[in-house]
Amino acid sequence: MLNKYLYKIDRENSFSKQKRLINEYKDGHPNADIIHLGIGDVSKPICEPIREAMKKAVDDLASMDSFVGYGHYYGIESLRKTILKNDYENFNFSIDEVFVGCGTKTDSTSILELFDSNAKVLISNPTYPIYLNGALSESRDVYFCEVDKEFKMIVPKEKYDVIYICSPCNPVGNAYTSDELKKWIDYANINKSIIIYDNVYKGFVESENIPKSIYEIEGSRTCAIEMRSYSKDASFSSVRCSYFILPKEIDKDAITLWKERTLTRFNGPSYISQKGAEASYLPEAQEIIKKNLLDYKENSKYLKEELTKLGYEVIGGVDAPYLWVKTKDGRDSWQEFMFYLEKFEIVVVPGAIFGTNGNSNVRISGLGSLENSKRAIERMKKYYEKNL
Ligand code: PLP
Image 1: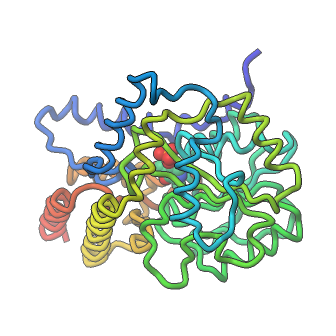
Image 2: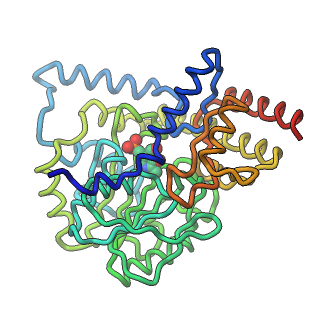
């Protein structure tokens, strides 16, 4: 008897379909010089201080004097302390409230195991697809929130138990302001709901009215679990390391229950990745990480400016690396994806992959190189010069 919820995962609007279409195009055009402008992965390598720390961690494991084995279910103590000191210095969280994981992709799904199986899960449409597919894998009932013109979720009248907020947002590329988040926090506290605040793009925030952490906002400790990852800033997308804060104020039993659950289901991320994550806070690592983030931001800014000049309607790209670009001439997002591929040999992500409300947009990303973005824009300019 298979899990019937897994049949609900949308295979039609998926990254696998996008990949198949790209491969079909390549088969028909063996000399194609395709530029990937949609990617959600980073393009900067891991920096030297982190590499050194991970090499040292390998050496630690190779000697019985420094060997580390089982027992660090919630993350190694030194990393959890480093997180508190660097990321939450004035917030007064205790080490018991920090849980280290193998990436926010898994953390954001597995956290559902803290909640009753009947908990009603609310997500945005469009959404980071993992919230939906992860919740379905956990056999949960998922509901879609209405969104406004900027694709931000509108606080509902009905009660939902677990609410995913992605800010800065993948795929839309904008972020919730403190005032907007305050409305969700008030809603959550009144309804005893929990907000899963996916903050993996916090390194990209530059606007003053966007909080770096949800805990900057009053009332959030009783209702919000903030998740962060080392994937985007420290380039850990294959190393795997993340963490989240589970405030004790959420529920008097939450930490105890989550510890029980984690002890049973998880042995913690690899010691090597955790030592790498710890090294990402070193000043010499931070210098490189900040520079990398600035490069991505410069790239996003360039793409936004140039696409706007070419007559595209673009949201995002300031506090997040993504641009949410409206399709032209009434094409739906898959047609627009094919249009970019066939006319410019550029790959973008069809918005339909992120939900039905995404079907008039494509996602373009600043996480690639500026050089590639410039080549892509040149192609588009040439096309429009000829075809206007
Ligand atoms: N959350 C969001 C919103 C993302 O866009 C991504 C990756 O693209 C992740 C989580 C995955 O993060 P991790 O690599 O830590 O699993």
